[in-house]
Image 1 (cartoon, helix red, strand yellow):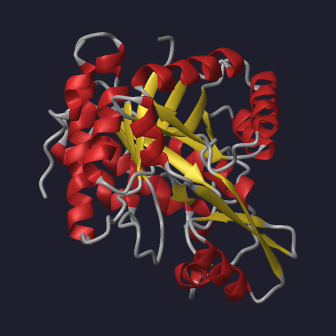
Image 2 (cartoon, helix red, strand yellow; image 1 turned 180 degrees about the vertical axis):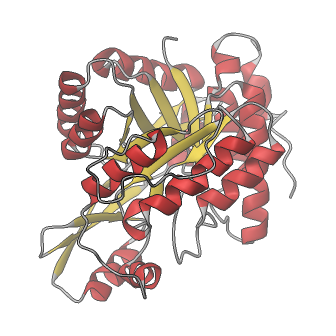
Image 3 (cartoon, helix red, strand yellow; image 1 turned 45 degrees about the horizontal axis):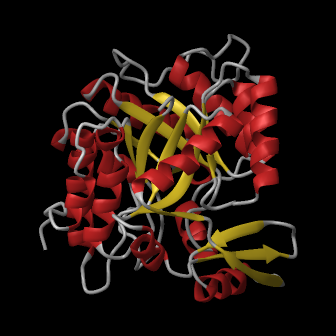
Length: 347
């Protein structure tokens, strides 16, 4: 196959279910991901959302570590703009001390919610004017214990010192983010399910490889697999990507027109909303893997992180099972059997 496969789970709250149900499904999926041979299992950070239960990845990660044995668990990602890098640098070494060699620290630049939740997250804090690249660089130095003697905080250390440091990743969907990750020499995850523009992906991959030739380039894609093409396409449906374009020049991706309107109204500045078809790879396991193979050959991606935007848990679990490394390696030749023998999850 030539590349690794991992999972990004947003802990979606399915219609008729609760946040408790959603988080229990996340635990079950992490356990299945480990069983099916996935490399990583990441959880996301979304605030003030009725559709997603995952608002605190650090807390959820600690629980998932206790319920799994070997798979790497991480954040996809921690939205650093809201937090002190020093506190993040304490949280993840604690996790890495509890489970050495299993912790991924994925960092995101997005707000992870609407402007009101951003204001709530930052309420009462002091804005010292530090920009995102500087915060990310500071966090990296804290994790690596490499602050130089001329830094204003020289001598500070994020404790405990874990047996194995958490691995840092930068999440993004632009060439600018790719350049920052390359400059800091950390793995870069391009969110193709958010930005499906192939020219942007190509430019981001080119810049990242030029600056950091040996870096780890990961592409996160939306993928849905089913026993036959027609069923997969039916499950995928007509999904859309909704973007809010603010007059100030900032653009944010949200889940619906309603969220886009709320986001724009909460900013207090003029805005425009655009809508486009979501880039979802839908088909049989063989078809999805063929598309991943093509992306691997084109961009020399080291890994793909699968995001499966499906409401029904049975279909979502089955999709991850069909696409798993266990199946890709041919350890189970009766893949169509999973339609009837779908993963059993608690209802």
